[in-house]
Length: 401
Image (tube, rainbow, N blue to C red; front, side, top):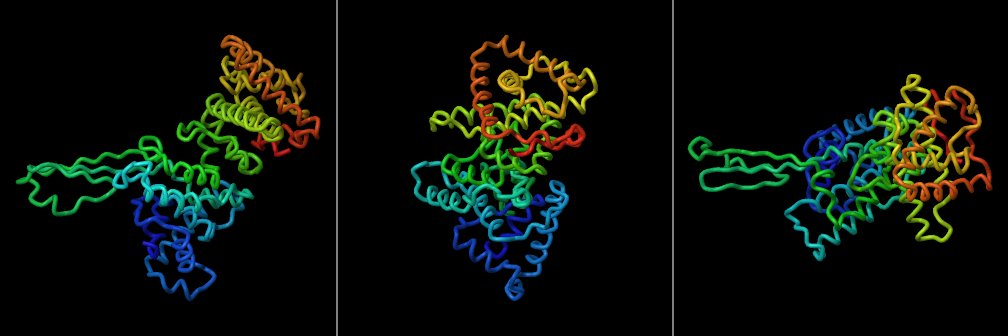
């Protein structure tokens, strides 16, 4: 399994195909994998079969192609220890979802596997945009993983195989024995879900590679986490990619998912820390959502953007931010009297009316979050003036203060 890990697990994970799940992988197994695949020592690569060498080469090509769709200057991602750690952690998380292991939370074996997976995945958030893209090139198809269940029925009964291929003997004499095969495909994330014991490891994987979560804000499990996606918003190139994706999904639904994540972040941090959530993080999140609105206004045909009368949680947060401190929403390089400024004013007025119709409890909460974020201007202003209208038309996001 370790010698063929790339061809049996990593390559299908990126290319598509059947993922082979074997015995649990730990730190020692990852070290052995790295010793076999270390590209720095050509002699070690001779220990791989030609098929495995081809799999390594194809994996590198596919990852490089994916990386360059996110960053034009992305370098080909290497098969390094970091990649092997993340892949091994995912392997163990998938193993914990298999029904043959049971679901007893007191099972010590399952807990040991989960602890090892968490240790492998706990490498922290990406420190650069290129690092985030390298990790994303490995894990970008997680939402496409499915579990196949096959039921073979014959004249004496039936056999059920989850994630396994039925043996050929069960299909012998199909007409005489009235053999019938039924297949069911269930999405791993949306239908099966992460086992309880594997949740810490899964969250560590999302923290290590948050770009997929930032690009899929409408996911239900786990809910969007602002602390996890915050590093992505700090990288201008990746924030530009995220902004385009959110506008493709829809300004109000995608922006409201981000606004709800900011509300949860501010509420949880305030309850855990008397000083509240970091102001600069909240201000960055609000400015990014405001930037989405400006992009939508500038790119949409005249009159179309004002037809949305309810902005959801996105509207509640931006209405409160504009009322608390306009600098959170209105960049200094766009005049309030300009066409775009007037369109934004009409949109916020419409969203304000909808927010008031739902009641003022949520509005008071939004005002509190906005007031907390506005205190960042007492320290030093957000660097919004460096972004021109022309840049906004190109999709340049608000940069990290």
